[in-house]
Image (cartoon, rainbow, N blue to C red; front, side, top):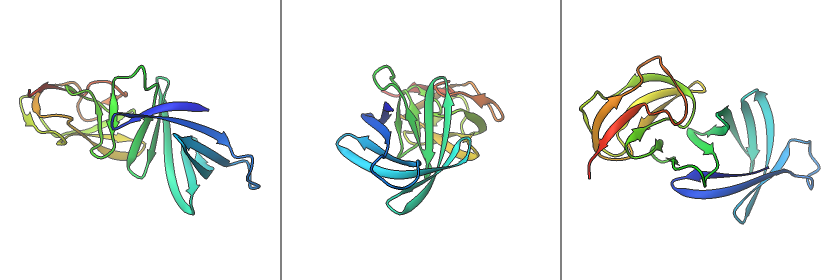
Amino acid sequence: MEMEYLVEGKTYTVKIDADENRQEKADCFKATIGEKQYQFNVAPISDNCFSLLYDNNSRIAYVAEAEGQIYVHIDGITINLEDAVSQQKTFSRDSLEFGVKDEVTTSMPGKVVKVLVKEGDKVQAKQPLVIVESMKMENEIKSLTDGFVKSIHFGPGDLVEPGQPIIKLEVDD
């Protein structure tokens, strides 16, 4: 399986195959990212939760799919596996930013827990604007830029899909 994803504006091509050279069970895989290869084991915990063993370290990964895109959440970081060429949206794992400069969106389907701003508020880049619960984890969604809150489209309890604008901003130039 081969796919591309965007993280912090950079496109990565990932190829994942069963690792036929290892003598362990059928849960052994190798991933090729650029020129580097990684070997890891995967054990399902539930339909969307997996235990990953890489370099003698265990990690829990949550996987969700919506509108043909795959979202992977590991160690508080969400990665959107997407067709990088056709998508204009990017994800920055350092500040949990996803979207375009004048829209605040989520990278995974979820439920709005709390809106931290109101219309007309001045916001700064990397300022938390909304909290969205996704896969039983709360994530602060932050602004990509300085500006003002132009409109708020969702409130606490509302369900949101990836790419839906939760908040629209008027961007400072």
